[in-house]
Structures are given as C-alpha cells and as structure tokens.
Image (cartoon, rainbow, N blue to C red; front, top):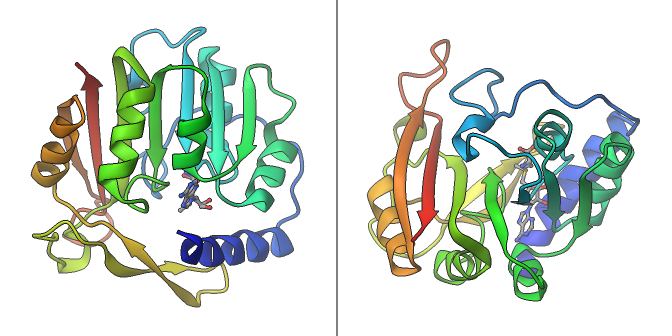
Amino acid sequence: MLAQVSPWHAHAAQRLATIPAHALTAPARMEWSTHPGLGPGAEILGPDLRHRHILELGCGPGHNIAHLAQHHHAHATGVDLVGLQIRRARSHYGHIDGVTFAAGHALHHLQAAGRTFDVIYSVFGAVGLVAPELLLAEISHRLAPGGVLAFSVPHPARAGRHPSTDDRPREDYVTMPDHTRMPVARWEFDAHHWGAHLTRTGLSVTAALDLRDPHCDPWPTTLLIIARKR
Ligand SMILES: C[S@@+](CC[C@H](N)C(=O)[O-])C[C@H]1O[C@@H](n2cnc3c(N)ncnc32)[C@H](O)[C@@H]1O
C-alpha cells in the first residue's frame, strides 16, 4: 500500500508548485470524468442529498465535495491519502458549510469511521487503486441500508486495451503535471467483473455507464458504476 503514496504525493507537490492554493467557489456541476460536462452529475447519488452524509474516497483538491455541500447542502467528507492534497482542498473549500477534509488511506478511514454513510463515491480515486475485496467489503459495511456507492475509473478498454480476466492489479501510470509518468498498480475490471465483486459484498449494481469524449478516441475513457446496498 505504501508504494502507492509516492506517485500521488509527487503529483500533489508538482501541482501545488505551479498553482498556489487559494479560496475558490464550488463548481456548479459534479464531474465523473476528466472531461468537464461529460455524462451525468450528482443526480445519480439520489434525488435529495440535503443533510445526507456523503464520503469521497480519494478526493484530491475536493471540487466534487465542495459542489455537494454548497449546491446540495450535504454533509460531505473528502478523504485523501496525501496530506498536501488535503491542505490544498481546505485552502480551496474549507470555508463552505458542511465540508470536512481528512488525510488518510481510504481503507483505514472506513475502518475507523464510527458511523455509516448514505452515499460513498470515488472519482478516479481509491476504488480501483486498493484491493477490491478489501475496499468494497469495508465500503459495504459503512453504507446505510439502501445507501449508494458510485465510482468512476479509467475505462478498462480505453485506447484499445482489454479488461483484466483475473483479480490481480496491473501496472498503470499516473501522468504528472509536468507530463512525466510514474507507475501505479490498478485493478482494471469490466462492469461485469466489478458487479461480481460488488454482489459478494452485499451491493447490487443499478447502472454501469461507458463515458466517451466525442472529440477524442473512438474508445470509452471512463467507466462509471452505480450500486446500492441491499
Ligand atoms: C486522479 S486523483 C482524483 C482526485 C479527485 N477525485 C478528482 O476527481 O479530482 C486520485 C486521488 O486519489 C488519492 N488516493 C490514491 N490512493 C488512495 C487511497 N488508498 N486512499 C485515499 N486516497 C487515495 C490520490 O492521493 C489522489 O489525490
């Protein structure tokens, strides 16, 4: 697990060196991919998120957390492995009511949480970067009955690749702000394979969406999965 800290720390350090953190207004839309405006927004998390307890695993600079607290009046907590990201998120959005940011590993944060959540989500975050049999079981444990898990991951068929046929992670790369790349282990499942893992932990898939940027490749770029706790 510690091996994964380094690329994410390096990414945050480079980003902070070029763009200093300052207070921002919350984005008007929730994004599930790296292409703004692509696919659904926060509506997939439920019709009324007011006062709902929401947790993001791998929140980075916290844009989606800020959106959910500011525009939907949710109690939104963002967790990230990298303390620098949490400092950056607090500088951007710490002034918004209902927002909490915490540094830590997603798995450990869930294990230590003394409460359940109505919604847990990840946007290119911890889901896909942590062993699914461990992380999905802990997510299911911390979701209230009927609660929603939604996560987006780089599409396993992006740029002509093929999804994994086994349960092992693959070597992938994180592209740094300076365009260099650092290796990272990633679980690259298709929707069916994610569905099998989710079912084992007491979650049922309600939708799986392939998002593709019409101006880019012919291949989908993002896989978005929505599941519900039974
Ligand atoms: C590609 S960024 C996405 C950030 C954010 N979700 C967004 O959409 O802007 C991935 C983030 O996940 C965090 N991360 C990676 N592994 C994690 C883990 N095991 N627990 C918590 N955060 C993690 C990284 O530090 C990084 O900030």
